Length: 93
Image (cartoon, rainbow, N blue to C red; front, side, top):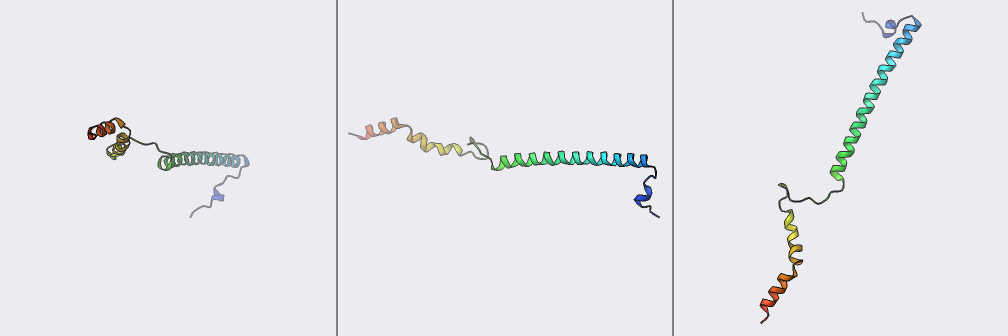
């Protein structure tokens, strides 16, 4: 036969108060632990979102993107007018 929870409570008022105080302390600790975990998870989500969707700077070539510097070839060729002048001078009779 199982006893109901109210049958387990003491009849003495002081003992009952100490039981309630203990239960409140346990509950408060559990809430603080839960709140700390929630805050930690929120911070982790914020960092992951910033990493995934935040501003990114251009990165140099890596193993995943070895051709990234190739995009600079056109600018490098256009920025060197001495070669164009030399080629034009050679073609002119």
